[in-house]
Structures are given as structure tokens and as C-alpha cells.
Image 1 (cartoon, rainbow over the protein chains, first blue to last red):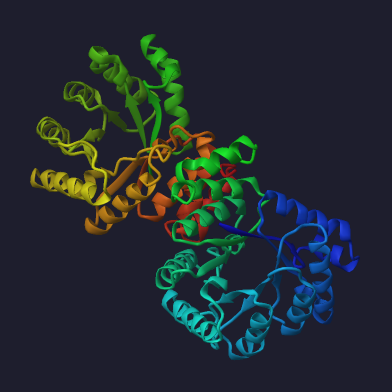
Image 2: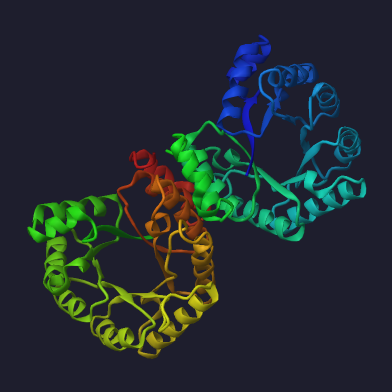
Length: 264
Length: 264
């Protein structure tokens, strides 16, 4: 499982405050903790800051990468902010995200190509988020076709089925799981990715829901997840699920994590 | 999910000791704790006691049922022990278990019929436990045919795919999950059941593996599980998984459990 650490997100009040103050220490601690817990990418988001977003995103990339040797997942739909952040990024970044909307494709595909970035593609079309799994797979497929036609290899594409809260739609987990299974079966070599915690929005004790959803998604083939790797329940569930699906044969990685005190 | 509480099993040293001493208080406490935690059936097992098994199983049924108003899941392959235990059982018992072996079917089907019991059927044939999911489904199907021909309704049949440890075979979770999905699709109205904790035998920190396996099995349609309902991680995972699969629409049961302090 490729882990994208979700914690440096301006929708979190403490992160927003750290951004306002350019609190290098706070941001670098979040980056380090996530990297130590197993994050492969550090998500950086300054979305709430409007006109300042490009500047803050650039600052975040620099601040994170001067403390951990990890690539960032640069989290913005704004082509200008993405472009500036990509210019200062060391190594191969991930962009979060492109959609099936024409304007998004036209502006972001050149950036993805120029920086040979990895890219998260949301199953959103011109008409918004489709209700059915089939429609999401169709939109996902059309974005994949576009990206491949532009020479972007499948292994750099991460399809996000879009995870909506079960508190507002009891079918939303089933829909996301169906999209994951379908995309993974149809496009061998591609990746799928989810923002795991979106599923539990509006419910109490969200950690148990998040952990169970990660387990179900991993069983359907999900290979990348945006999550909090510092949550021991999440990490235990992830490692247990890898042992159960045979990705971690005989549980050897699980046993090693247990010996390091990582399994709760 | 129908929960069969697994704790009163003579393979546990404390339970074996309580059985030797006919320790009513100890056994009744295990029964009560499991019933309060949500068990629908209380499994009773005296398998290690050989010739004394029938007597002890009978004592267990009486002891459990004089403390909780729950049916027992009478856990023995021994027809004589099952018969004596069934004679003292109040209400509709579950028998754990019949197999595809001819002798097992011939001796146990009359008991199931006479007591109108529910019955767990293991996917074991004359040649032992089949390696592949397909062969297990085939044996399960042949037991179902036999039971139905004897007038036992599908809703009283619980197919157990047999859960073997992932520590000895990395495919064993996949095989069990495939059998569950297949049986639930082919025989609408039937039940499937697993001994959840068998999956983690030989690994450290078994609870995380058990909880993740329960989540995966529930997502495949499993509707009955033999487990420890007093483990808060297991119960949280179960309730979270029911909310995710839409069995608990809008997470209403999950929220109620959270308010009672049952979700960790």
C-alpha cells in the first residue's frame, strides 16, 4: 500500500494557523511524524487561503522537503498554485487532482507531462459527481484514455472513485468499492486511491469506520490511500489487511511491525 | 450479523479447569458477559474430555441456560454427546457441526430433524479439507442438497468455508472469502458462518487480524460469526462494517452503540 499522509491540510484549524504564522517547526513535525509512521508521500494543502494559495503551497513544499526525504502530494485544483509548487518540488511529485471536466484536463495535463508527475484523477465529469459506480468508471476510463493519449503511463495514474459519507448515503461505500474493483480489473498496472476518512464524516468514533473501510477497499484492490498513518488503529488495520490479502505473505511484514511496537 | 460467542471452549485452559470442577459461577459469568456484549448463541464445547464429553456438554447447556436466555451452539462432532446435550436444551439449538463425510451426515441429520435444530455444515469431504475454493463450494453444495432433501430448510443451514491460518497458507483468507461469496450468491436464504480467530493462529497481536478478517468476510456476505463479542475491537469492527455495507443504514445502530460506550 502506498500511503499519502493527510495531516498537512489547511482545512485543519491548527494547520491553517501554522500556515498563517509560517510555523516551520509545526509543519515539519507533522511531516516527520507521518514519514516515520510509514507515509510514502506527504500531502500538502493550502486550499482555504484563496489568492495566497500558490505562495503557501510553495512554502509548504519547501518546508516539508527540507525536513523529510519524501515527495509531496500537492493538493489543489488550481493550475497556477500547482505550477508554482511543482517548480520548487524535488523529485517526482504527485498532483492531487485532475478531474474529467474539460478545463481541468486542458490546464493540468501539460503540467503533469512537463514535470513527469504522478496524478490523482477524480471520477467527476461535466455534470458533477455521478451517482452510480458505472458512470464513475466511465468517467475514470475517459480520463485514463486522455492521459494515455498524452503519453502519461498507466503507472503514473491514480484513479479516485470519490468517497462520500455513509451518513448521508448508505450506498456510498459500496459505490466506491465497486469503482475500485472495476478500475483495477480493467486497467492492469493502474493505481486506485481514496481519501479514507471521507467515508465517516458526520458519524461519531470515526476511526473504527475508517479502519474497516480501508480493509474493505484494500480487499477490492486499492493500492494507495490518503490517510493518517499516525493513527495506530489505521496502521494496524492496514498491515493486517495486507497479510490477509496475501500482499504480505505469511504476515512477515506484520510480525516485523509488531516487534517494532507498531501494532495495537 | 448473528454472533456466536466462542469463549466457553474446553481448549481454553481456564474453561477446562472450570469444567473439571463444575465451576458454575465461572461458566455462567462467561455466558452472561457474552450475552450482554451481543452474542445471539453461546457456543459450548467440552471436546477435550473424551468419554466425559456427553456428560459435560449436557452440564454446560444446563448451566448456561439457567443464567442467560440464549440458545446454545452445541460444539461437537460426536453424535452421542450432541444427542444428550440436545435433550436438555431449551428452545432451538444450533449444532456445530456436520460435515460432508457420509458417517457424519447419516448420524447427525436425524438429530437435526428431530430437534428442528439449526446446523453448521463444514466444507469437509471424504478426502478431508479441499485446497481450492471451488472444491469447498462443491462439497458445501452437496451437503445443502442432502439437508434440503431431508426437509431441512435453507434458513436453518450455516455453511462454514473452514478458516485456516494465514501463517501457514497466505491464500487461506482468499479461499474462505471466495467460498462465502459463492455460497451466498448461489443459495439465497442460506447462512454462512466462520470461526474468525482461526485466521490469525500463529501470528502475534491476533486481534487486529481477526477484526480485519471479520470486516472482509462481512463485505462478502458472511452473516454469522463465531467470535469473542467481549473484544471491543472486534465489536467496533463488526458495527463499523455493518454501517459500511448498508446493513445498518445511515449508521444508526453504530451511533446507538457509540452512545452506550461500546465503540472503541
